[in-house]
Amino acid sequence: ARKNKAHLLISIHADAFNSTVPRGASVFVLNTKRANTEISRWVEDHERQSELLGGAGQVLAKNNNDKNVSQTLLDLQFSHSQKEGYKLAKNLLAEIGKVAHLHKREPVNASLAVLKSPDIPSILVETGFISNPTEERLLKTRDHQEKLATAIFKSVKAYFRNNPPEDSYFAKLKKDQPRFHKVRSGESLSVLASRYGVTVSSLKKANKLSSNTLYIGQNLAIPRS
Image 1 (cartoon, rainbow, N blue to C red):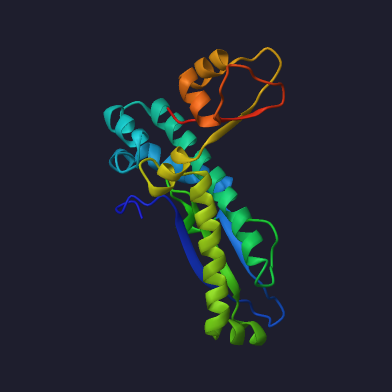
Image 2: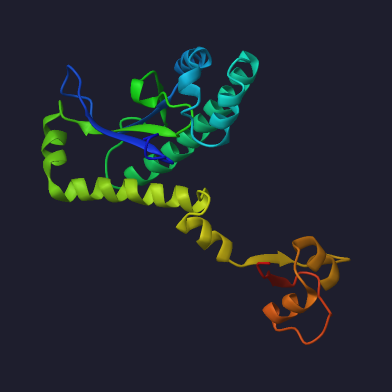
């Protein structure tokens, strides 16, 4: 994942238990204990620090003798990775819950090797229990596989729409989307133009205004500069 500069890591599995009763899907995220263990390892491993994606890796490579710098940056990386992974996991459970039974309705914190990356938000998806005969048969069907795949796709797409990587297709879409502002007391076109970094003429053009008069509660489209 790091070699390919991945923005997300999603590991997909089928669950199993020594009883045929448990069934349903779950989504696992990195727990704090495992995160702290991994941070300690990365602080000591200078070569691995330079592998980190983004600016943190570059900073660590230049300051690899300062453990305090390493500890702080790795803490921040892990915190961000955990937060984003949990956010994706919540969305994914909501989507899977529409097409399958859920074993756990909230993300499960776990100490799993695949969920230890400090710089890539990571989740592990258990699609169901193959130790449950009914669910095993269901997991083998093309229709159910398509439903699960679509649920994962929808949640990932929604995640990237809200958190677009720099220079990505979603970042361009977000940049091109118009902004809106509801006029409040005391606001004028010149005030709003200054606030949003646009010109008065562009504001008037975007809203087809023939004068500079604004009304409280009026919705204005704010053009992108």
